[in-house]
Image (cartoon, rainbow, N blue to C red; front, side, top):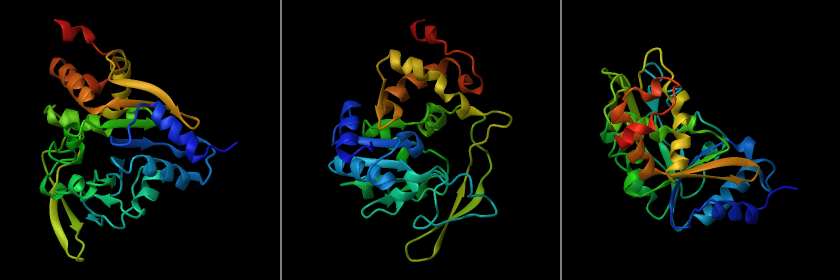
Length: 261
């Protein structure tokens, strides 16, 4: 039997999400299973429930935007990370940020204010941009049918802690298409960790998040989920990185003892 909007609303409540929350969703539609209305039905449920708050999907374009294909059009450039973000982009009332490689799209009363200003910064996840604002808004981040390897927020935490060898020293000549059709030059530094697969190790901190009460597990449809508190993730991960800046460069266990020395 297909999940209804009421079923999905119940699941999101069980995850501890309030209608007035700020919620960013990393997603795998395939993991959710059969839903009345398919992927559009999933968005209907989330958008209806979070209308008083702020619903955010990452709409990343880092995979295709580069030095050769360097013109980012917020209105038309597809995201490289799946079905739900690309459908969300086209919904009425959804606003997309202007970051050439790490944009997000948002729906809610202050979506315009939240997404504004990304063109001012030259790094993938500036603290003053949309990823950093998740801390200011005490946001929740939902991994819906996907693991914490998808946790773009942790790229931001590494950036804000100035972990060496994560961001290029040089800039790519990227451009942002403005609503009037002109282009704004936005030289951009990129994620750059030669020989390493940093995000492949982001899930190593999940057990620490769960133990600290920063994360909890649940489900949405058929999908196993982990939902995390952005402030707690930032604080705990920052403490761990201060002890071991290269923590995510390998799959060795997290040294939690360092927090109590």
